[in-house]
Amino acid sequence: MALSAPARGGQARTVNTSSDIFLTWGVFGIQLGNLIVIVAMLAVFVLALVLPFPGSRGRK
Amino acid sequence: MTAVTPGQERAAAPTATSAATATPTPTATATATPSPTATPTQPPAAEEDRTWTGRTRRWLLGKLPPDKLLPNTQPSYVASWIYVLGMGAIGSLLFIIASGVVLSFNGPTWYHVSALGHFVNSVHLWSVELFFFFMVVHLWGKFWMAAWRGKRVLTWITGVVSFAVSIVAGFTGYLVQTNFDSEWISFQAKDALNATGIGAWFNVTNFGQMFMWHILILPIGVLAIVAFHVVLVRVHGVVPPLEASETDAQLTHPDTTGE
Image (cartoon, rainbow over all chains, first blue to last red; front, side, top):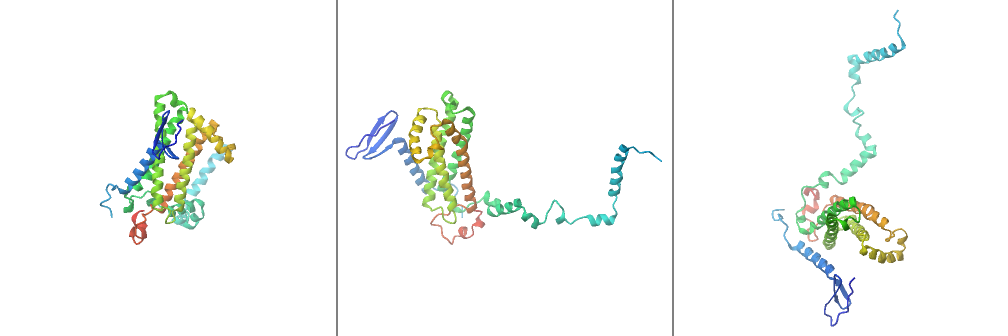
């Protein structure tokens, strides 16, 4: 089980206990794995909106 | 006079009867021939409508005709990656069910002692990760295009309910890992659930109860709700994007597009 430590000066701190890595900004803290998943979901959402769909050019 | 025993009498009687009925007059044959609508195997339309099976069939065909259930064309606005994410969640769900069936053959502790079991258990876990991944991005996409428009409220609600039931299914999965993680999670969760009063019926420290919820009740619930969700999408069609013009022929005449 990982514990987060308070950040100083608003900078992100990394606390590593056992195998979990926690990032903390002040009162906000998040496990690195969860942050990666959230960022990946946002990236997929944006890419799904902007990337052209194959074969869509010839449709009415 | 010829003597006839009772057995001979019984044997001879059907022959005489069949001979009499097998040679009808031409007039009798002509009048006995019924019209096609009067045969017992083909009841008239009015009689068919009174049966619950006939009424159910007509209702189903009216709500979801075969070309709507399995369409071969879609409106042009569906040609976008944002419409693929829901199918990504369904594909992940199929992997979850398949790997879960394999795990159920060998029990919840198989993956502790078998490399193959560990692999199948990992497939199960990562399929769940992808399932929630695609479901959340699908949710974002549908939220920002207000997918409840056009009488699609029930489609939206079934999506929300399937998300909620899936969370409970995932939670019970953590409880049946048969390791210290599941023990710690269950002992933390019992306090929260007992505070709500639900702990008397949903005891997270009862492994047998949680196991049956995870492999029977909740999978049936998720599959049923997801299937209903997909059928509703077929019935009402794929929601158009917000910027689509209301004068677009695909929206004003959706039946012509195979939607």
